[in-house]
Image (cartoon, rainbow, N blue to C red; front, side):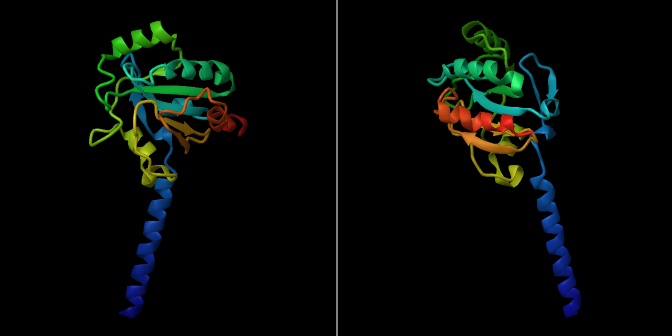
Length: 188
């Protein structure tokens, strides 16, 4: 009986390790979301690119960061950077608009040309599955990091793995923040 118990324990440990290893290989490419026009977009479309995923809001003190994001996108898009913006109304109702209103605001006020997605939830029980991946170490293999406010930034490397999280108040035009993002462009 002791040998049977040891074998069972060993097989259980192997199964758990295999399950953990499989989960740690999950990438951002496993997810899809609707773009601002309502079209389903598989994030596998961005395979091989460096992604900066940002939850955004139109009526936030950090809203001027849209201009910074557009400038960063213009500067590095030809090197493989994609900015993916996800409007969310999770913090003090600072994104109350419809997708159409959000799109008009971003286009007219900031000239946004990077990809805007439809409104999602980035916190709580109705959190978009991609944000579950971005904020839970068990999913992303790097860290637990709940979205703290609008304009939190998640950096994804060319392999689809989370590699960095940048605080909402940190602007991408700051040299050290820009470097944290763009260093992944130089890695094949």
